[in-house]
Length: 74
Image (cartoon, rainbow, N blue to C red; front, side, top):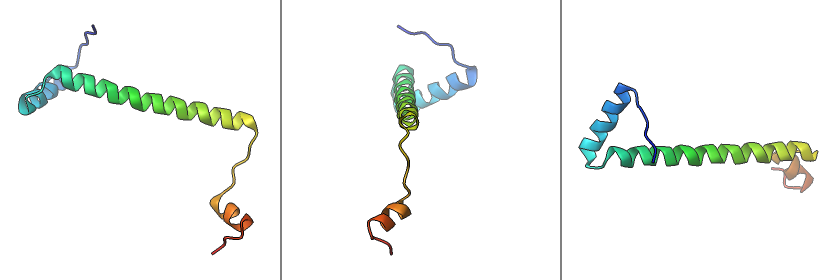
């Protein structure tokens, strides 16, 4: 169980949305938290992958360099 306090303006907006759609405030709060968690997990994984790449010493190659190397220049 999680109880949160929202600023009054957010509470009003949330209540209005719930009233207009027939869904509960809890539904929208849960959806918002899940979306935020997914976004934050994606950011964490991307940061971790970037850190691992930088620590690996591997080098990036631009698409132009790769095309030239493969003889695919336009």
